[in-house]
Image (cartoon, rainbow over all chains, first blue to last red; front, top):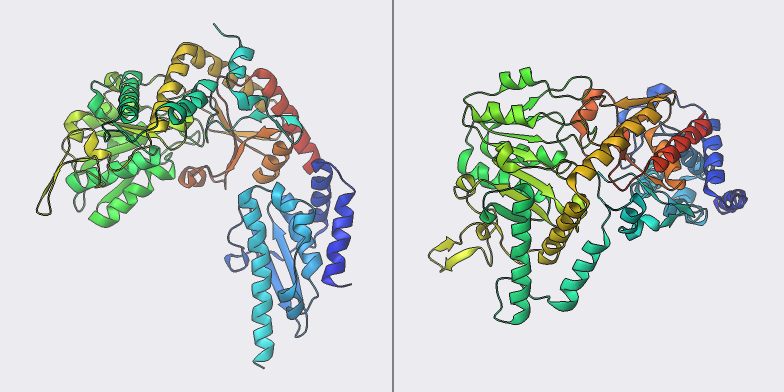
Length: 142
Length: 405
């Protein structure tokens, strides 16, 4: 599946809920299902600035694709991180860099998270793209 | 005497629905809602007599200048200052403290001098003093608090000494709602001829403040937290202090005579009011004071006491809820966490239930560090809130617990 197809899939899943509690319950479930991040990566180096709750994001690059592991101390945030990982993990740096992320708006996350939260979400996306840019540069310099 | 539903009807926004649910507004500590009287007053200024104050020769300017000065008199009377000249309008509490830290600092603070604040302070009463300390090489001393967020007076008495130049403390902790013993703090400072600044941002709206009886040297607060418009605040200072301080901003209206060789400054309070002031909001603030007085300070205080008692009972009755700042001297603010559930998760779900609370450090990181936590969920109530709303909060918290367990 392409990044675009995964985004469509997520939009479809969220469209099943017309109230916020349903959407939040889904995010909470997604957060709970997120694979555990090794505590040794829960350091300042992997902490994302700009989020009011703590989010740690750890990237791994195998030379062709990037995978992400993450955690958050807040469960709804963790659910949002889980969605981002589903979209971006296992993709090439180029795919990540050029991805147009529209599912966030479509499922109403951006409008309905408080502005500081929305900024947190943008910080997460920015950090994911920055890692991809760094890995791409690493490949080109080989 | 108005009934609670009549009082609520005075605040149009309280009838709003959010996400299809009736709004329950428990974020009064961040900003209070405005009664119709204040909204109408702002409208009146702009519709009927908007003109720049203290400048024009025309009717509109005369009228708005007059209203602005009436507002100053109302502030004087509301806090019982001795003279109208002791009331300086600013942009808010933060503006007031920055102004004072600059002016007082220029005049009275030198290298190795000490400034005392407390662990409970809002960042607005920490950072301006830290900036001053950096400029002057002076030192910030901090009064500690106990586990309940109460000031440890014995420690304060040890901190105060010959090097202390000013004591700047809050009247009430914005994060925990705990009331500070400002009387004792002021008396001890005065026994050594040291002036005090009291940050009344969270104090003035919950109890009457009498600056003369309390003998505060400086008192600051924001209009928007006492049902007035945003963008207006007050710096009260005893005349003997204000007349000693240099202006903190230069510009129009604050001068006596300007030449390129030398400028002389205007008299109090105008020397601290450079440029066009937010006169519509000052006039709106006076309308807010009129409103508060029409409801009555005793009524407000007894209503808020009842809300605090009831909310404390409801929240304490929920297993897993932990209240921070368990003191018997509090305003109607409760800070809490649910064991095992992040404050943002709690706040976000409550929001979707129509309940507005604040989450985070409340711009008071040092006290959060002292409590050993990252932040809290803060419920700040005022006289227009009801027991029914507190019941809904209780149900909301149970719902949060159920969702995240």
